[in-house]
Length: 249
Image (cartoon, rainbow, N blue to C red; front, side, top):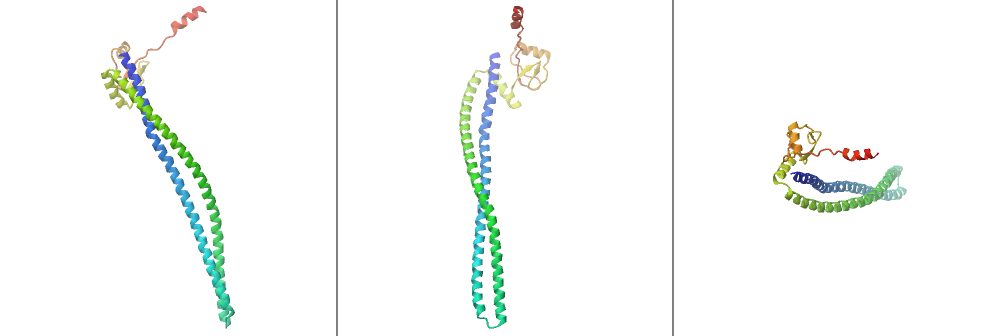
């Protein structure tokens, strides 16, 4: 029975290792999805900045076209003003020219404003492109590391499960059946040491007679409180090793 309990302890350690591998294998794709989602958000922000910059250039081009139209109007009105027959006609042409020139100045002021905005947007786009290239490299590196880690974990998991099968084949079937039941109930901790006559799983003290039975090794014992399989490892005494040395001194 002691050998079976030793195998069960090894099985529990192996099951924890298997659970760790499975957790990491499941977690790595989530991690990759998170960093890719962050990268995608930065790409969308860069696309938005590029769109703003493009719209800014379009607005400037339209204003430049408006200025050209107004310039043509001014040129035409000045030619007509020369041919004016009356003061009223002359002042009317002059009023139209003044209006066109005012519109031209407004458009020019707006172009300057757009140019200032474009300068800031262009700097943002250039900086974002550089940052995105660096982030893409980092994401690609992390993905490669995650893929390599997953491959290693899958291999180790396969080996661990194969080893587990050999352990299960060597353990007493009744003990193994109990181990599986308790493992599910306690979420992975089916076996607990007894220290100072207490179960380390639930920290409840054992009845004196029950503890004596456990020490005697009468089959495998279950904690009467939490149901875990109990292991008793008596404390090691070094007195016999120390005494000869003291006498020699």
